[in-house]
Image (cartoon, rainbow, N blue to C red; front, side, top):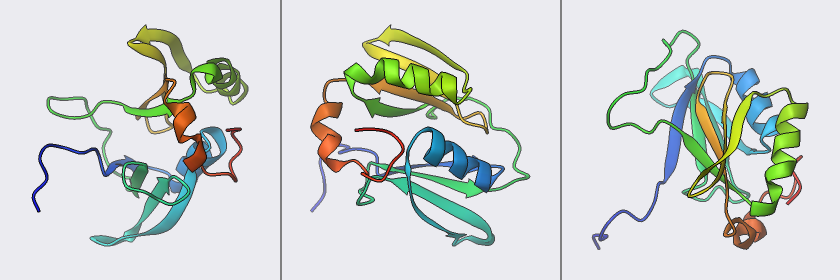
Length: 150
């Protein structure tokens, strides 16, 4: 059966120059779940890191290829420039304090339809924390063994 329209994003893949630094940032600072650490099937000498929700469902997956010598990317036409994470509306203060405690530079919150905090990962990938009431509905599917409270 052919689907009508785009139903969502299966996953996002980016590049990291330092796999351990990437894991420390995404797990310890942002509270993502490292689903698995494997090798890149097309380039077996490099790591492939997978983050996702408790069940690793499509649409929650963020992966990284570990390519230490890759040149820094540039923003251009027809490409995503930020990866956004949904957070509960009432958690903005928590996230601001957490980012300050972790000494992570950020902007915001600022209003763009919803309240948004913008930050960058250690490799310069732009990230957004987007506060929205629908995040409360998804709390049943979050990873429970995380350093971030539900």
